Image (cartoon, rainbow, N blue to C red; front, side, top):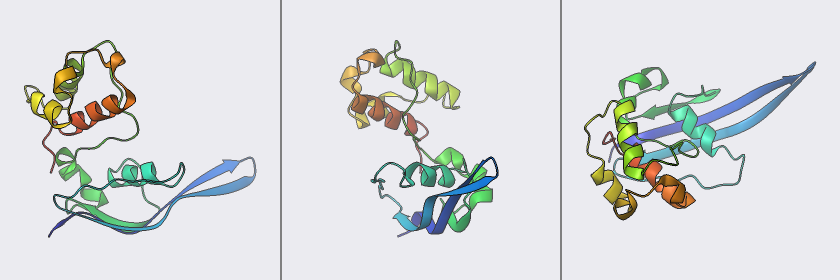
Length: 158
């Protein structure tokens, strides 16, 4: 089976300078990971364990200090060639609280270059079809996260 994410020896060190002092924070320290095609992978761990930093590295939002990785076969310098085939959420999705879930999704589809794309399928897939016309401010945190997942699915990611 083909791996869609391959990570070997990923390190990310943030350097902070305060006056004459240099401090290093090791956010990710030697991660090895392989996610097979068709698989799902979740990060669990305490605050500060590197979950978000790893995702940011894989999406090209921050540069890894050391290590190698490929996402959909693309190395870090080639991520722009595959980024349109990736669905992701980093942290909490930002949504308009007074818009319905459906309206938020349509707006995100338009902004993401998926104008006219079906939003009903992703809403059904994450279990929000019956609440799609309710304002997002009435959603629980879990429902907002599911709406974020629906947004990540809009482009039919690989």
